Image (tube, rainbow, N blue to C red; front, side):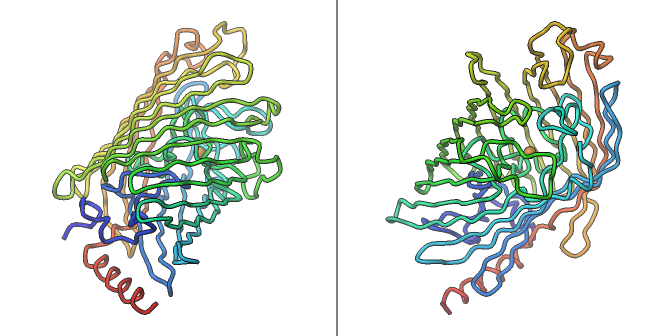
Length: 425
Ligand SMILES: [Cu+2]
């Protein structure tokens, strides 16, 4: 039997919340995914708690070429646990997401040409992806139906995601095999770790309206603690529509206060829109795609800085997967840590990634894949001497461990146990 998540019928089998919405729809924080193609996960019942976990651990050799490139052996990784149970007439979910990247890729993160965002040793981190914080998320979500078709929820998180941006890249099925971040991360989905978030939502079966108040300051370089402190002076709103289990469309607008610790008094606006489309293609073949637009407008400026991204993950069968990403973003002299003397205010960048993973076997609940990822970025003539090329390239070779998909038998047994647990309530 094929693993259940290769099938469009999976969601009926899963734990559902208010209005019968499957937990499979949950992306980062409170965002929604199309549930037709899922991230691999493990599922367990402990008393009345329904526990879902997933993780992605890469051991990689990362080689980014040129004078601003570097090579590194390291590990990009994250794990996630969600525990849900009935509570006060609704449903309570506790969520934790952790990463050891501060130890496994170091303080300045892994080499990633043209990436930018956050700081390392007090200066803007460039041509590297910063490590994610140990507490990528720690939060509680309470949801309750008001009527047969409308429900509300409240999400409180000392570390978590406000209602801003698309589903963050590490939670998107279209990006699940790509270890590396998007270079447009800080124009689109970088708010997925904010230290202090409150989000309220009203939703129906196919739509959701959310508003958040949050601490807009980016995480600092000390990755093991909570960077609480500044008030919840940032705010955002998001609308999401899931017309079918294959499609999720969202739009958000955020006011982010003092996000950049090197320019602490500046605020900015961020607008985003996303379309996520996934479907099973028959047998064990499936495709997940995402198209994302995100733009920042800094305080006192009239110009929006736009970015766009398109990505896809195509499993041709249970063993072979191809993934790809194309992005376009304009970065400033400040973003890239360049001298003003290069002349341009901002630099249009176009990055293309192509990768392949082959599943090579499993041990217990761990499934292993071996993969490679190549990337090329087109930079303008004014950056040629800085990167020693108009087309700097990078190559990443990796071994990936993630949950082995649960089989149809395992899921059917889980479903039986859930029914018994529900009857014994
Ligand atoms: Cu991030």
